[in-house]
Image (cartoon, rainbow, N blue to C red; front, side):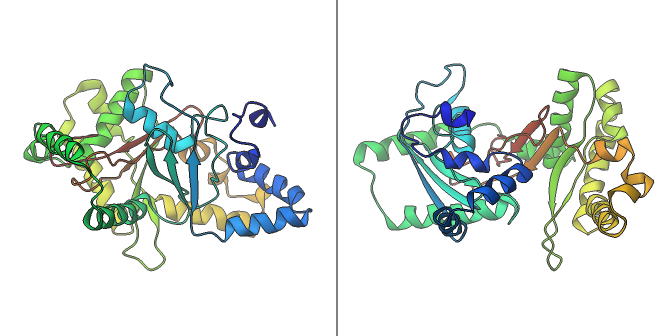
Length: 320
């Protein structure tokens, strides 16, 4: 209701706000809404769609001048800058939202439970590649500008430099984010980085953790860098071959709840340490895009109120 009061005039029906809250609250909302047959039919229509197209009319060019264009575009695609702008012109329960804005900003907003982010990136890039190869809509001036952009994108080669140090570029980024958090707050936190399990039947993801004792020692002493990278690479390899800890413990937790109920859970799943272990103030993911798409990148928010969402893109000539 508060979101509806603050909506812009283009969003006449603020029903999109129902997809922004917790799942329990949304379930109760739709249980009430489904008592009306029209609402029931409309919800089923939306649920059965392959994707949702969001045409944003509200201009976002006057947003906070302290933000750079990448930040503005990322926030616009992620949440539309809230109900005051385009936040209610969304259907967040859809797996794929195609968002096209008045100022030319466009992208996709994805719901993560169906597939990993890299799957959506590959799908989107294939569509962009098809459009680039089969349509020629650029005028002469735009083509000249495009060539000029290609000339100026060349930068030092951090990817090759990092590999030359004998460390993993992904491990480098993970430890850099831990260092940034340590400098800001003075301590490490649980971090989440998805490790694909698609080599296994019905496999989805497990979690590569970066808040290790070795990483903490590096932050404090700056002399254990290689050991921390090696530990990070080991954890990554263990996850990729199916030996991660998160899926295993999560399955035991869920099965315990089903078998014994919340009142009789094993002690490990009642311990405060377990509750903190499955809370991720630092949610990360390497989501590298094809170098041919210069301005294509993935952006997401934190998964807890006091957290950070850190998607990073490792390119041959740059880190994003």
